[in-house]
View 1: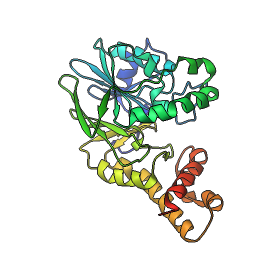
View 2: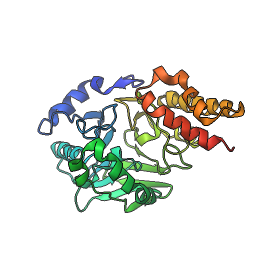
View 3: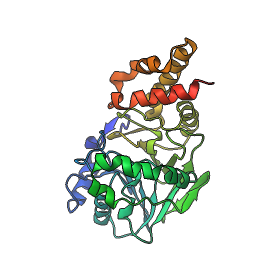
View 4: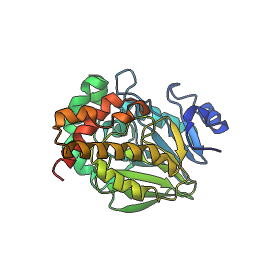
Length: 311
């Protein structure tokens, strides 16, 4: 099968089987079978709104012989509950691990749907990042999600921390977790590789369709990509984008975007162009290649200009 740019809606027989299995769950929360034991829910390529309940990030479900791991829980407790309902239609095995790939609300606000006994896992920097940002997130997302939805959210830091690399055994299925540095998309990016199937859940170290979002460092991200692409994966579920893709070719578009935004910024800084005039010019050659470009590229350009201005 050609996984180069395969939309979630065209994943063939596995997609139809998986969707048929989850009918008891809300009909707008479809999942797709990616490989034996690996499932994904593809969030909308959109901004968070009350209407979409923050369902804008991709989520992974990995089922072993003994237990289940979840990779991110979505942008609201409603999404987390839908996720849990889907899992219960797939298996009676317990959810042992909730793995958060980083601290952004669209990936962690669903955590509260998972009750006692679940082990929350994350990058060793994740507790500190949550402590610094959680107040801001809960305040700033009140309008985006709605007051009632925010009232349900609980910020749950991980208790099992990945310092560099860690392996989790689900029974006949080993997950390889890698905590990446330096700062890339964020300062606490984590990936999950199912070694049995070669499916990589990249979190937001990979964006497809949706323009990449720089909340860490564009240059740091490029250095991480150079090591990330050596992972022995076959296919990847990105953090955003309603498709899977072959690995490591899936990184090509993101790598180009980050290179363009870095190179444009350096050129304008060297020419003495001030930030206010430079930002609207940075990475404009990428504008027609990405969804939500006008929503995020100015922020990316500002962050990259600030990063490179004094180098």
